[in-house]
Amino acid sequence: MGKVLICLIMAGLVFTGIPHYAAAEEVGAKMEELKSELKKEGMSKEDIDAVKGSMKEMIRKGAKKEDVKAAVSDLSKQGVKGKDLKKSVDSMKELVKDGEDAQTAGNIVSQAAHQARAEGLKGKDLSDRVHQAIKQRKAERDALKKQEKAEKDKEEKLKKEKEEKEKKEKGENEDNEEKGSWKGKHGEDDDAEKGHGEGKGKGKNK
Image 1 (cartoon, rainbow, N blue to C red):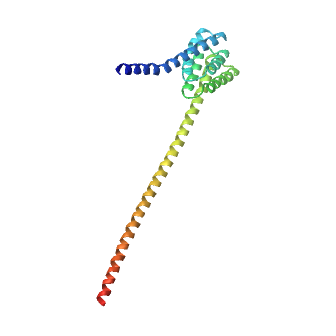
Image 2: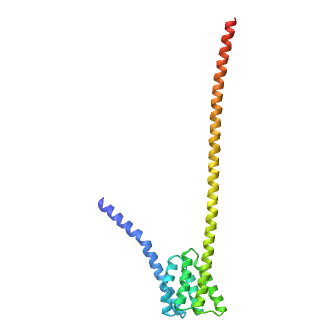
Image 3: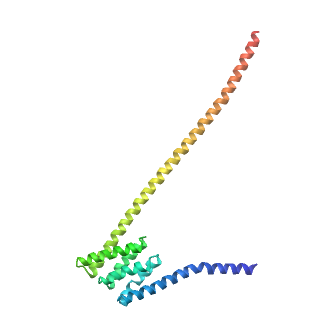
């Protein structure tokens, strides 16, 4: 019995460890594919190494490899490199961590980069524009979250007030029923006592 229990415990430990290990393997495999594909598109090893941490974090959070690649590749094609590239991809990562899907975050990054490029910006100025676009989107999301929370709190407050009102009305109805029952019972007793007294009086008159 003891050996069987030990085997079951060991099997459970192995089983519960598999999903985490598989997830890590999946992230690792996707990262290798991503780095290889970006290298084929002409990105330098230095630039890939500069953003690999943020790319890995986004994929770990559930971002599709294709969405991450599209944004990073577009930035690279716009001439964003080194620290400026890292800053832009870091900004995208923060938005993904905040709950934004990678495709939307990538589109924001790409649109901001293209707009900045059209205005003649490049390097640090371009990455600053991307950072500002991400910052603005994050602020919009925070405002939306606050609004949703306020609406939810309002709904919960109204629900609680309704429940308290119903509870109070139910209590008042029960009190009225008890009073009515008490009055009815004692009224019958009074009538019976009154009838008994009248009968007794008639007997004396005879």
